[in-house]
Amino acid sequence: MGSFVNLIIYGEIYLMKRIVLVAALCSALSSVIVPVTANALPVGGGWGTVRDKVVGALVTEGNLGEGGRAILEKIVVPSRKNLFEYKDKAFEIQERYRSIISALGLRVSCGLLNPDRYSGQRWMSCEFK
Image: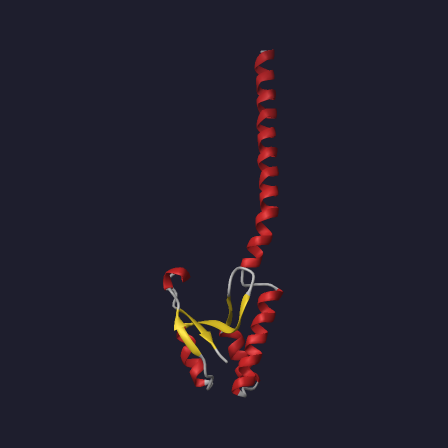
C-alpha cells in the first residue's frame, strides 16, 4: 500500500514539474513573439499617426472639410513597405471604396492587390503626389 501511495505522490510531482516547465517555456516564448507581432498589427500609435498624416495630406490636396476627413479616416489604411516601415504618400483601401475616393475629387492612382493575400477580400493600393 505504501509503495502505491508513493507512486501516486511522485507521479503527481512529476506531472507538476512538466506543467511548470511548459508554462515557463510558453511565458518565455510569448515575451519574444508578442512584441514582434504587435509591430505587425495595424494598431497602436504608429499606425494611427501615419494614417492621420496620410489623411491630412489627402484633405489638403483635395481641399476637403471635416466631413471629408471623417470619411477618409474610416476607409484609409496606411500602406507598408515592410514590417516596420510605411510608404510615403501611399495607402490601401477596399475596392468598394474607390468610388468614394473619386467622388471626393482626389487624384490618386490605384492598383488592385492580390486577393489571395487578403483572405479573398479585394483591396487596392493607392498613391498620390
